[in-house]
Amino acid sequence: MDIPIVLAYKTAWLVQHTTYFCELQQIILAADANMTEPNVPSIGISSYSITPHSNADTIRNALTAWGIPQDQLEQIHILVSFAWERPRQKFVTPHAFGRLLTSENVLPIAEHLLIVAPEVCFAEAATWMSELELIEYGFELCGDYSILLDGTSFERPALTTCAKISKWLDAHSNIPGSKRARKALRCVKDRSRSPMETASCMLITCPRRLGGFQYRNVELNHRIDIPTGFSRYSSSPYYELDIYAPRTNVGIEYDGSDHDEGERRGHDAERLSTLALMGYTMHVLTKAQFSNQLSLHRACNAISASLRLKPCTTAQFQKNQNELRRFVTRRWASSESK
Image: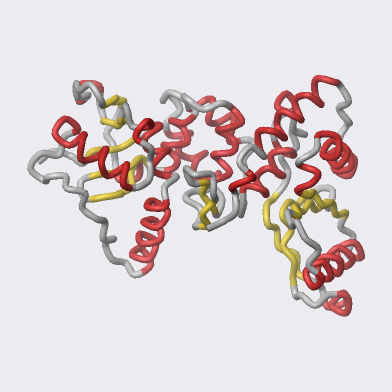
């Protein structure tokens, strides 16, 4: 019997950004929790002929049904273990892994159809994505959301972690894309909960040549328990900071609200006052600041000062920072979560 077909590279990335894949991962997680085998659907691939040649149309029809535009499927990228296994077919682009594919490198998405694991997909993406795209993709893989193909975001558990990607890259240092992937991974942090949090953190962690601070000692959604002595100031037993810099006790929050909601604003004011009393320096980035170059630049200057960073005032850095701002906000008009 033939081995299952493994979707890879751009095709795997497209599948990851469908509602079908996000919902399937929840099914797989539930099965793992119950220690049972996940039920993956059949798309019509015959168990008697599991080859790309005989199933290309079947796979393309399934991918289209899952929401991938047909113009993105002119080539279906697959992964095989060794170069001699590459099929010769007009609409299939095979890639050789260079070693035996094992279960740790793949995930099931349908009967007789697999997709490369998130760690593999990140390394593969380094061969065709820009540096900013790759960093943003890393945040998404290690965060609790996915950006769907229509630009909206879908809440789901993280697909992997920075540590798992790093470990996988250490074990596969000679594969194409591994060096670029390792470089981008330095800027990525676990536990982002939205594209907006990712955008805020990229301003901090990205290298200066890309418009960031190149400051990596930060954590996302860091929990701060309220000590008994400060409980009189707060109605909450703990707070979570969107971005936290432990060396300088600086917190950075993103506020994307468009309207003044009285109760929530009151809670936010109480939160900021309590954290200030506890010795935290807090900064808030807003949607309005992200929409204006100079407003965001001034806000970033204040954050940079609190982080005790040497200010970068060159015209080139401001240009790079604006390019980064434009990049991270390019989809925000349609980024409301489903």
